[in-house]
Image (cartoon, protein in one colour):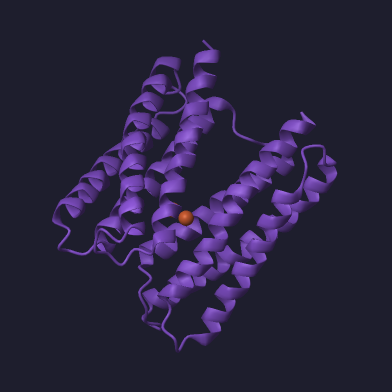
Length: 263
Ligand SMILES: [Fe+2]
Ligand SMILES: [Fe+2]
């Protein structure tokens, strides 16, 4: 039990602290050079999460769970602060108080990822992780929206002359919006919807689409890295969204295994 707590905590922190670190960089890249205060704040978050990432990587599996409990609290506080920063930036953009190239949906998106991470840390420390039928619905509602947003960002950041890729990104955006609505319907029909066959089918169907989107992102990332397509997508952002899709796919694979185990 204690081992599982340590392993799960470190896995989550290793994945999400790198994500939070990169968000700081993406936000910074989207500010204008006059917004020195915001750039400094973003830089500070970058080093905070870089430090957390390094600490998480340095722990060994036999670390005292109480040390990890305290570490989770420290990371939770830092994540709460970056969440507040992202929401502040969103407000500034929406009220036209700052210019720059951060889409409001992107800033909202990265704040939702911070909120998700905060919630996971809290669940770990209070021992309140969702039981499987709730986890299946909650994780899908969260990640399908994340995937639908990614498709929209890719669509808008590719050069308009990349017509075939733009079209593919738009199709993914539509597919994931549909999958998200299905997930919200299943959510609304809880607990009656949480039958083994329905959850099985839900996970299977989403897995097929997430695998396709993950492969599309991998191709896009490789093409961007090799400078073979025209876009304003930084290579690190292409890799970032690819990693998030892979992460969701791992969660779906784990659900699939857990659901077939409980048969
Ligand atoms: Fe992200
Ligand atoms: Fe994301």
